[in-house]
Image 1 (cartoon, helix red, strand yellow):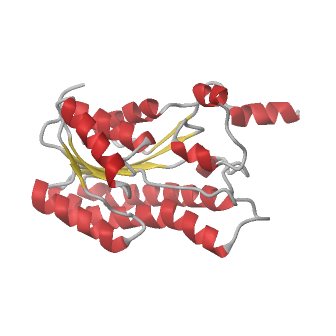
Image 2 (spheres, rainbow, N blue to C red; image 1 turned 30 degrees about the vertical axis):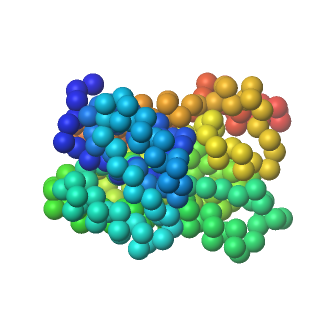
Length: 252
């Protein structure tokens, strides 16, 4: 893939998992990356690894559920690096008490805030910058659960990810005239740290059969670096050994 020197990407949830993989993949293609998340030590490790491989990464610690923090990072990136070409809207979380029997109002706020409100905060922060450029790509880490709601992920998480899909569609409808493209990527089970919050422990054997962070990192890079006249609206991706399909088969 051709080098993309001069482009700038802001990656949220960049300290581990899909965000880290996306940041590494983009940096390997010459994109300058801005890494956001709540854990400065984890972000710095990713930045150091990117620098060691010859890439450029900047750490901007932020909790993206805080709209003021989101605006601060967007403004810093614009003022320091001059542009934002790519937003990887990846930050998200889930809780163990996710069934309706256990769900609380606080839990609802936590899940919706981390997975949907935060995504909107980041979008609204970068859109003015991208409109001024007449160009930009927004990539959102959705979920298989947004397309196929499941008690495994829980109602709040599934609803938030479905809301992200609606957000992305309407971004394309409204912002296509400004040269802005939006893509929601909906992965099925992926071997990332969020699995540790599952009520039922996921075995190492099952994790090995899942999608891996680098699978998504490579996909995000591909979408981000498509020609400006191409919009990849939505991608649904799963492991070949899909435990969601197995669950259906086991019931038959």
